[in-house]
Amino acid sequence: MATIKIKQIKSRNRAPERQKRTLNALGLRKLNQVVEREDSPTVRGMIDAVKHLVAVVE
Image 1 (cartoon, rainbow, N blue to C red):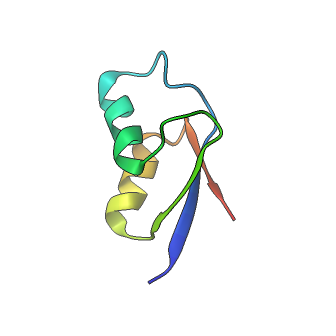
Image 2: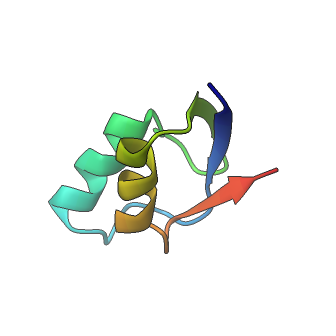
C-alpha cells in the first residue's frame, strides 16, 4: 500500500487537547517533524482534523 509523508508546520501550543492527541496519534511531536504513514482513510481523517497544523509532503 502507498505511504504518505506528513509534516507539522504550526505549533500545537494553542490547539485544543483533542487536536494535540491527534498529532500524537500521527507520530508528530515537534515542529517541522516529518513522519511517513500508510495512506488509509483513517490517516486521511486524522490529517483532515488537523489540516491547519500539518502539510502533506510529496
